[in-house]
Length: 557
Image (cartoon, rainbow, N blue to C red; front, top):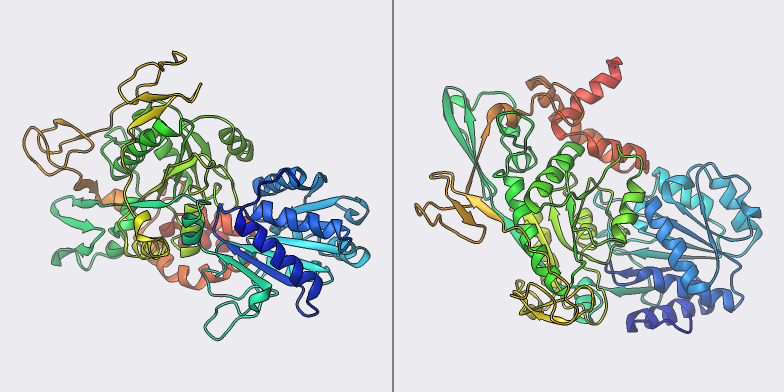
């Protein structure tokens, strides 16, 4: 610990927490509400080490949201304290006799309540709750943790997004009549994202709102104009078509893959492809001064993740790392990506809260969950700093959508005005081998001779004359047509008959049923505390959920 160079906020939080635990005779819960990427894991590990050194506790237990985050905890905790932390699964028994510090996922606690009760009853225990918003009152994870750790001597609550999207309260905390945490000031330390940027602990973020104007073509009928800035213009003769309004929703179209005539090859002029082209261009700029900078794509479902992965490979020439729940080795893939210089990782909600890949700088954001909690957690993946010499920015490419715009404006309001600026093209590039500053035009490093890679230029094809233009062009250099505006998609693709991602064929009745079911089920599922159920539900396309529920009811499998 003596070799740790703590940030000022960490030192202040540690001092305040220790004073609360040791001198306070009331609540045994202390809250650290700090922006994602600010360094909560190190801070909490030092607090644990101090309490151990002062003989206040004998054992430390960490609860984290995902297996990959649990691994990160065990590694960083040992670096700080020199103590081994054993990773526990729901199948472990007799853990009170292990004699070491323990870490587990929130979901595993459900099967380990009695085991952890024995630990807390037999030895003075500090429990560290990472991403505490998972522990909702009267939900599986919250009830499980409340029962398991009721007799812990202290609980250290860590969060970067304290308020749940469903508005439910979390265990161990008091809330006021407006739903805000009502914790005494001495029992809480807060570091906002804006403060973290100002202090240099997190990178400032720039949002690119990606417009898309769709024309949904109908056989023998007029096209339907759809934009992110307006409601669909549905012709009178089509207004009585069942399920049409849902089918031509802008965000749904943004999440609908578009293929060439063979229905296999991704269309490189699709809406998603243009999002990725902007992401590639920005990542190439970042890699001039941060040569190992990486990009993250968050896709709404497995089909879209695979689709966007294929597009990235075709556009950028490098196969990205793909992680989703159908791949058995996703956790290993995430760890491998963290320790390489590969450019892109494509995920369906697996590279999310708590996953620490410091070199991520670009986020292409097209998620299934559109809550502010998910939005801020996702931004937290790309704002981590690489040290004092890291002058890069985080850059988010997202669809133009009122909900996401509202979240982005809130984040921007937290930052001071001089941080809310777009990326400037670097004036030099850094050699990844010897770190020598080189001219942008240099093909080789003047110091060590390293050959710089030549990124593929990102282009856009004019839909009128088919001329090829640089991505930065606003109008076609050949015919003057406005670029980046309109995407053609057929109504059958908008309806997504076949729901390829889960192999279902959907009727208009199925879509209608989904619309009726989702509001009544969504809240119960998200508050259930079951990561398996939540993960499964999040992977089902919105229009297929009614069909899915009916299949389960009638055992159509």
